[in-house]
Image (cartoon, rainbow, N blue to C red; front, side, top):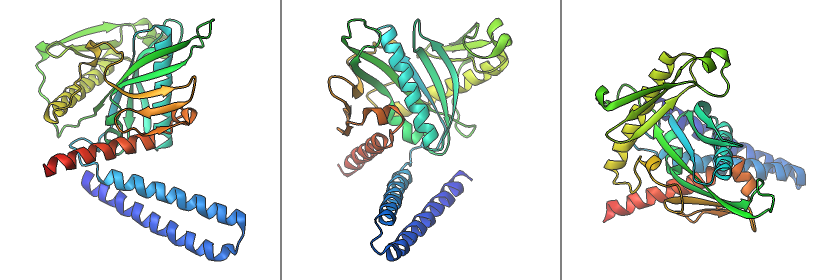
Length: 317
């Protein structure tokens, strides 16, 4: 069923692109030198070209779980309020990208910062190829800026880590020994009403053999949060297995390693100049505001193309 839906979506995209190209040619004949109309035609064709490029990349998302929804976990690094504010900025960036890309986003859990921002948050991104697009975001993100929290207006460097794992369905079997999992309950924080905030409804599961921990506090009852936490744990363990198969350099123990200079994937410099640069693909832009407002697709596309290029190179060796 999923393969059929993917094929139908691909055919629909091709038909839309053909129609937009045909409409553009017809309008070009009618424009007759009209600058406003020509400008509109150029904008329409540019959007069509971007859509075609995205469709081409999505057609190459053939990984075992690329088509699935995904969990995106954000953790602030060392640095207190600075890094916690940066983690909050990253959360907003991904929410904006997801909404602009037609995905649905749910916040599964979050822990507010001491003064500003967040210590951690987990987002559930729902939609076709959510994991395929976002899996390359796993790693450490570095921010350089003039601190809004420093009265001396000094430049600060902040870090936050991102972990991405696919939501898995019943067709994928992940065996977990219940005796390997420690369950902790605690009082949920933030929004949710009196029932959520006055009972120990939040649930944290820790898989002791791997050290992987997940938490959920979005449900109104401990039962709902426990079920969601188990789903998240299965997802994280499956992602760990995928990484082992792919011999990835990074594993799912990011929570045990210091979030600092190592394992960086992208640098965001706001002062003294403006530049966002991916350290793996060398893709960069000076439009820092656009990126932080969700314009991530060029970076995701570059990472996907880079990964596919590496895979093809390995296959020919």
